[in-house]
Each structure stands twice: as C-alpha cells, then as structure tokens.
Length: 271
Image 1 (tube, rainbow, N blue to C red):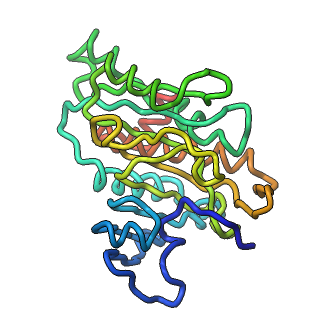
Image 2: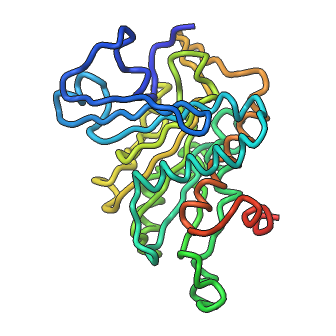
C-alpha cells in the first residue's frame, strides 16, 4: 500500500540505495533490531528529504511485536541508548515529557499511553532529595488536542515550561507511515521536534527547539497510513499495538532519564 505522506525520514531515502546531497545515512543491526540513522546536514538535504535539519534514528521493532524471547528488555535498552544519543543531559537536568494526541482515539493514543507509564519525579526530588538522589526531576503531562482543549500543544508546553523550567522537552506522538509494513513496527526518534498532525495533513504549531527554546526530542510510532483520497488505514489490532508501544517508549524513557534503573525496577515503580 502506498500512501501520500510519511513522518518517517527513513522512508524518504532513495529506494535504490542512492545518496541525497546534504543527507548522510547508514543502517546497522543491534541486539536483533535494525536501526537506520539519517542525518540531514543542511538546507539542501532538508529540501531533498522533506525533513528539517537534524538527526533521525528509526528502530525496526518487528521481533518485539512478534514476542520473541527477551525482546522487551532488549528493545527498551536499545531505545534508551538512542534517546541518550539524541538528547545528552547532565545528571540533574530536569526534563518535561509530553504525551501528544487524543486518548479517546486509539491510533492517536501513543503519547497518552506513554505518558501514563512515565515516572514523574520532580515533586519527589523537591520533597525528599536524599531518598530520590538517583532520579532526575521529570515532569509529565498530556496535552490533549486542540478540538477538546481549545489550546495548541505548543501553547500548553510553553506555559508548562515557563513554570517548571526544563532543560529539555520530550514529546511522544503517533505518526503516519507511507508503507503499511512500518505500521506499529518502528519507532522514530529525532532531535528536530515535531509538527503534530503533519503526517495526515492536519498541521499544528511546531514543537521544535526553535519554538520552545530548549532541546526537544520527538519520539513517534507510525499507527496509520495516509492512503490518499481522504482514507486513513490502521491495523486491525491497533489497541494492543498502541498500548504495547506506549509502554515500550515509557520504559525506555524511564531507563534513559534515571540512569541505573532496570526493567524490573521500573516494573516495581509503575506497579
């Protein structure tokens, strides 16, 4: 199935293995997962790839969704490592994590699902600094969507950031893919931020380092294919896929933001 749009930088690469001016890419395997590393170097590359200047890591999670042995902890560790590459932080740097999307519409609920399992520790660090010395201060929110809140996600995040002064912001959202083979099978991480709704032609205000004033890590999972003609296609078992993807991203965030936590530690904290 061929769609009209894609949020995935890896899908914009030439299918014949050719190179684009201003774009560097490589593919490698790690712990049974395929990773595509794309870097848009300049405006020439940005125009060629139809993506902002920055770096894009796309992790193929096929073995995770096939429930292969030990695939969950391996996928969590790999995503946490990718997050660390794109968002280097000092030990005490505070982070704001935002789940974008509509929790009432399953294909759009990746962000809310991830936010629900991400550890919020800012208040604990402030109240009991010695007991939570190994944790960094993390604030977590769900922005909802313009139609139900009357506010753009960018407006909400700017207001929240003004109150909690994060050193960086992480946004989690559902994406659109061009190929149905990518649906709920990949995670894209990028340091360029995101324009919510862009994959299905419903662009909102961008959530970027330039707009929010701090580094922004955007994490997304494609849950729909824009098939053209107003048709949006999503997998039959989308509810299960979205819940699994949200949990995976949240665990990886918890592992990356709070160094030293294992999957079993996170199991205990999220209960």
